[in-house]
Image 1 (spheres, helix red, strand yellow):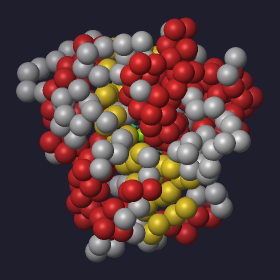
Image 2: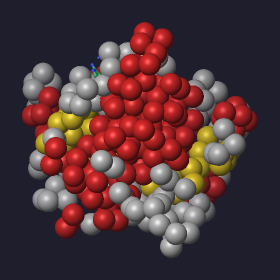
Image 3: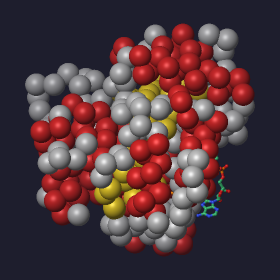
Image 4: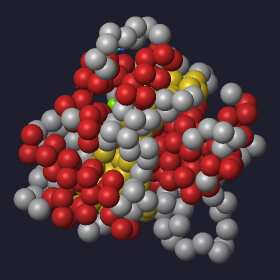
Length: 298
Ligand SMILES: NC(=O)C1=CN([C@@H]2O[C@H](COP(=O)(O)OP(=O)(O)OC[C@H]3O[C@@H](n4cnc5c(N)ncnc54)[C@H](O)[C@@H]3O)[C@@H](O)[C@H]2O)[C@@H](O)CC1
Ligand SMILES: Nc1ncnc2c1ncn2[C@@H]1O[C@H](COP(=O)(O)OP(=O)(O)OP(=O)(O)O)[C@@H](O)[C@H]1O
Ligand SMILES: [Mg+2]
């Protein structure tokens, strides 16, 4: 794993006085509905805390005031359930470096239809997309939406991964062979990167497999995956910007995913050392800076 940490270090843009606001990352989160406001908040704040300059949330009308009230740092657009949602998001796309689609999105048909349009518009502009949570529900219904799009990264948990396997692979596959199953799924999706979260995170782009088994914690409180998706939104565009020559033969999304997984686990580890059983995802947020320094700035 040591060498892979070096690859992540190579993609981190230096902090210098020569840059203007926005150059380290402008990220959009697509998600947030009546039931779920925490998930898009976690994804959006983690993007900022890892180093993005601006973090936008595109959510439903009802969810917006709630998400805004969590943080003055987020830019919140209450557009996702509007009749022209796709256009409302599309007009921001030229100003965004990456999208994270799914945290707290819910599964309402009308919203998923809008997200379909947003994904098509993002692909047309070659914008990297991280797809998580209910975004993966949509992909399981319609895998062709991201088929062959190498700037897409999927971040399924255990259940979401099994759902994708079932939807995408025609032959039976032994899901207990996590490396083999991840490789097969990625290949079947045309080399979309797949991050299988779990006791070890298994990451594959259909050609290679990386595993992240950095010590995390035994707390499984909700929201940790949302933090991961926000980190990845930022890191995937850092990695693509750094270019393949800095990757030692790995693809940029693979290196970015390894970085995001490591950082999530390190934050979980540090928060658990302080709060033990009472650790929640909110306790991981103040750990982002120290965890990042520890892993990538030493
Ligand atoms: N504070 C919030 O607003 C949060 C909202 N969330 C949102 O909640 C929505 C549903 O996400 P879920 O992740 O619950 O997905 P699902 O609704 O597909 O539920 C998966 C279920 O499987 C269970 N499960 C997880 N790991 C398992 C394992 N290894 N073996 C067996 N069962 C397992 C979970 O407890 C969960 O009940 C998404 O929109 C998500 O973003 C979550 O991100 C958590 C935090
Ligand atoms: N058994 C485990 N041991 C150690 N770390 C784990 C374990 N399971 C998951 N993780 C870590 O927890 C983080 C979130 O993964 P998880 O599977 O809980 O995602 P999720 O269910 O999508 O979370 P969320 O509640 O945000 O939707 C990842 O960094 C993953 O590495
Ligand atoms: Mg999740």
